[in-house]
Image 1 (cartoon, rainbow, N blue to C red):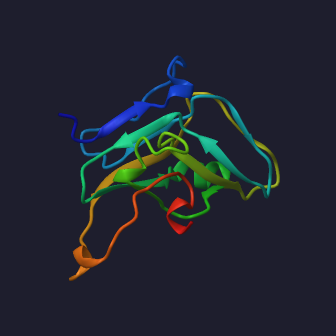
Image 2: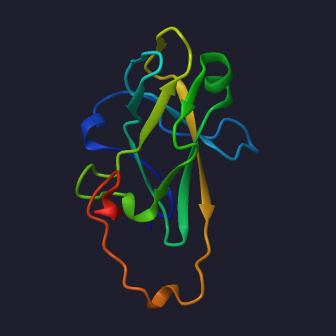
Image 3: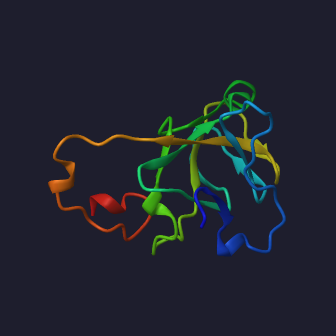
Length: 150
């Protein structure tokens, strides 16, 4: 039985790029590398593909965070500060659970990120629910970005 981890999405199944991994024994985050080169224009928001989806258990979520080197050296920010990947995002009907990074180049020059660049890190978290939460009818996820608000 799979508990938590990462898989390539179908579009990138045959592309050779590093899968997320922790780089040191005490690292909390799994570094995400790009499956293709990306150019980020100054002042522009861009959804950047990771080529990866994540599976996990109920009661868990994956937090996506920009690597500090990207923020400091390249002036890139993750526009939602922390990307929240829910357990039911995995294999959703819209995009297979493909984790995309909403990046903004805050600099004045284009930033080229080569294939294989470590851009973000994912950290698995547990969460708690409020009293009475089980009494509220929940929708079944049918898609990707913004799908729970439809």
